[in-house]
Image (tube, rainbow over all chains, first blue to last red; front, side, top):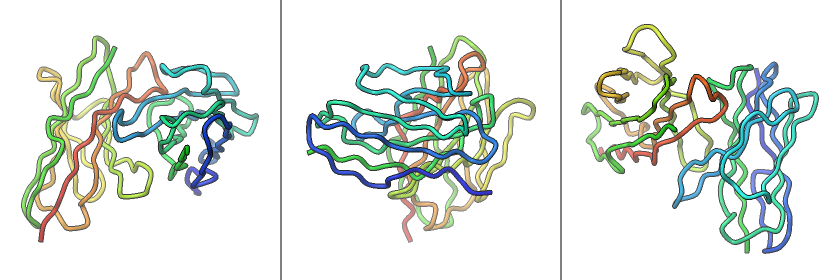
Length: 112
Length: 114
């Protein structure tokens, strides 16, 4: 069974731009969670989607948004990028309960 | 609210020696517990999990962990480490009433020396 895939793997953007990251979950998994990893703050939860609905949300500003499609693929969007948004963005999928999560390789975003 | 504390930021150890990575958690509700490993430039790989049942859980690559409810701990152990175990290790909890949201510790870097 294929694992979680994330595209692109690397991105370089400038301040003020927006970016969209994509995540394809393991086949059959319906829950997708997103996390931000930085050296200073560690791993922080952004949001979780299940059946195209946001089921859970972390403490991030409204510039961070996401969505999930009917095939369970998910995207996250960051608008008006700031230097502090430079991070590794990880998505994870789980079957339905959102408990046992399997992670993708991440997207490394650099904001200049 | 839940929180996770990994008591050591770095653990240096010689090859073939035993190792213990310590993790304590705080929660007012029941939780599920996990250990993940992250190799450089990669995502997180699930090492092992405690959902219910036996408090001693075994995972991949020879790792095991013991859930201690009274001490709110979930320490990770391996009797003999290899150079290839050099990586960052994360302890995480998820609430049984707030699934989808993993709360992570700050990570422990395991450095295995030859």
